[in-house]
Length: 182
Length: 182
DNA sequence: ACCTGAACACCGTTCAAGT
DNA sequence: ACCTGAACACCGTTCAAGT
Image (cartoon, rainbow over all chains, first blue to last red; front, side, top):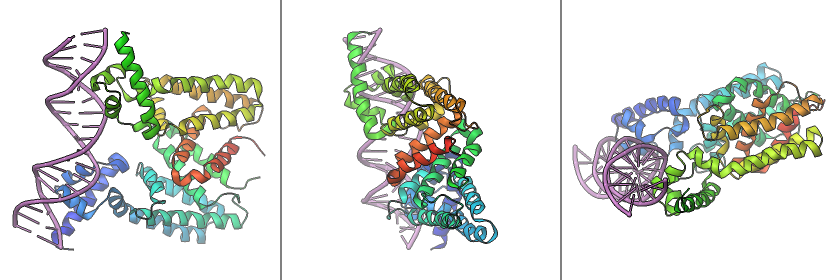
């Protein structure tokens, strides 16, 4: 990448980060270009779709969540690892409003720039789930697809201001439903 | 209301119904006016906000769900009544994509045209929940606010095409977490 | 190679002017 | 009383023209 292109690219990501924090996944792309003092076409050249921009922005977070799987697996009991990882994953989505709706569609669409990141996250969750199931700590009738949808549902709850006081409680209710407590 | 105004009002509602079916809660108001062959100002005169339009559109559904409480209470066991009502409520939201996000904000905003409808629905759920709790059929650490948020979360899941195959299953997982089965 | 911004096709919302 | 549509301030996306 040419030096000036690289500068624009970095600038766009920096500004986009701020914009996502403020407005979530439906940030205005026009506004990003404006705030980065870059032509609109430049933004589209570097990030042909909204998903591509978000992917560049979130990749490191996704990788971090994936890396947590190995750490948690090595250090923590299977049920606790699953719950901790869910908590961390949802905490991440909480600071990126609306991203989970996009991820939920992206996972069905191999063309989406977010597709592989979504698969990564879903598989990360799946491996923690299977481990817990193999020890009889999680219910058997749940799979990775279910888990991914439940993450989305919980993230949705955390996004609602009117539910924020109860969100942690609902997290407990739902995750404990995944674990075999009886 | 003058006869011509009434005609426009009805026309707008009819067209809006179609548009909501197609596009959910973020239907284009401009498009509604266009398809109703009515000036944009006329739409805004009758429905000053998007919420006002949806309220007019959904009022009868809300009332029907409220009325179901009495029927279910009289005819069905407390736990079954709760689950049935949840299923019906979520089935309703399923055909009105995104409405629950609006309802979730409206319940915090007394100025919203949807506010009282949301309260009605939340209270309907609450009364079924309390009945089940009083018979020891539902867990005690859940309240109407939790229930409303869970309805939203489940509705969200049903809205995601990638989860549709598992949505009924997840409904069972979550609702059974509300019931005291142990 | 890369950047720019006008152009196009959309929005929501308001309000002066009309009947 | 009620209706209309232009006007304003926004979008996303594309692409001809420039360096």
